[in-house]
Image 1 (cartoon, helix red, strand yellow):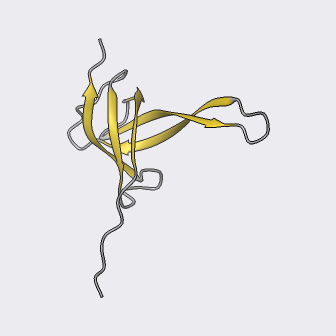
Image 2: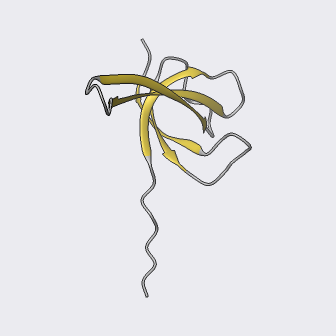
Length: 86
């Protein structure tokens, strides 16, 4: 029996807060089709992500990856900074 590790969820979003040590809050846009009205509904989800080297700044676009629980709220970590804020 071969046990393969499940692929981890990956999200791309914008850092909206970087005030805490080694933690950033990332806002990820979510768009889905309404089941009855067939319109595109745009929402957003916030994730707390672990940023080991405090590299991400407010406004940066980052890629976050699902990981084991780091703290009470952190279940994600910053994989890379896709684009720096201007």
